[in-house]
Length: 622
Image (cartoon, rainbow, N blue to C red; front, side):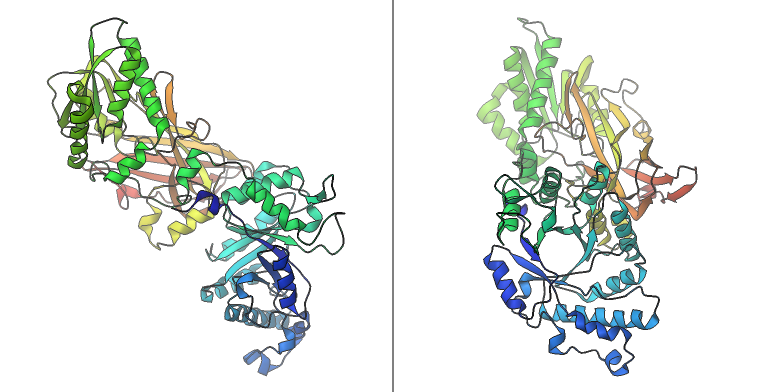
């Protein structure tokens, strides 16, 4: 797995709009002054003469004269971002200018790809018509295998620039080969939502103009605090490049050609220290993982080992058992409490219970129940080497085992990222018959939460499969390049033991329907739904991956992501309504979900199909 700190390291480039006769000399000077790459025009503006040309020979087979080029050789190809010509008129009303601009763009891109430049960047996205520009860029990137395409977007004090980018990428079919080079303004938006919106976008580079910097006490350039905070957040959440511009005059008294990149590198080296969750998640950010099928598949040893590395989860379980024992048995009593750990795995919960009993000074006897034959061998080793007569091992499926005695406390760790998505309700239905009438279940309840989510990265990851099945499958994901459109809300809750049913005849009592609505203040786009859970282990002892109550440093669960088949445009002031169903039959359980967007005037601007109808694409086997 990649070093987490390496993933946050940013290269720093130098942008120039000048047209150098000897661009190699400029690049060498930039590299010598500590820059990692440069962004420079590819073609000289003298070539703009072709815009009004009716030369059919050129139109049939465009060719450059050497003097029409700024970048003439591939010498520094891996250190150049080519700036596409700013004189192109792709959306001109003049047919000749428009057609010739298309030809000149194709020619420039072909030259950049021939040289092997690592990226090309458009001029700043215009505020006027961009439809033909989007059409041409979308068409052109299909042939670009090595060279990346960056669309330069000049951020403003509102979300006007984002809305124009959103139009552009919509017309370009949300093409995953098109990324953003975000240029920062002198004044960042005051509205945090406008800033947060960009965290869900495919940003490959951030352009920081020299005139944004201010002078510190010693006359060196530094960023204002608001810009510092935003740039550092981007560095933390995206693997991107930072580009500084070439100052035309001495803007800061003590500045040298290297001062701006040195400051950016300083910011990058001094990002907030990674917590345990971030270190564990390194390499898994925005990586789609299918949820577990716990009843159909047996976990392997490495999976158990990964789960057991989380000290926080087991610390809370131990605390829950400790308080349950204190409440249930008087101090000094000779009563031996029976604790059953169902789904014991390799035994971490058994150890929790034994430590809790020792701390509480209460007598206990444990049953460790496990259906995985491989994990059961590990349990036998632990019993022989450590637990001995304090623990009775049972090799059985908890839904079918019939114990000779009932327990005081039933302990399980069957929760999934959505709470119930790994069939905890169904498993505990079968196990609750082990409990005495006044017995305690740990956990005692868990609640699923949802929120509308923007993430072009996750949408493109799902879209890459090019089928319906993947758009109707939920994924376990550690969100990074993503942003919630609104704080999450509770969808449904399960409680244990379920006093209403002793041995239910079917699984209908575990079906659920939930409907929640969210007011969205600004124009946004939605790519899917984020899911979380919050669980009460015992009374005040909880574990949670809900953003507002997340158990500090707990990393056993990532959130869950429910995609939508087509990105949903959400106008300012709209209400987004999410509907969810937890359905099932005798053999499986599945989720269905849909989205509706209602404008302020009550009209419906978007409605999705119900995803995964009848469990056709995704289900969890009983």
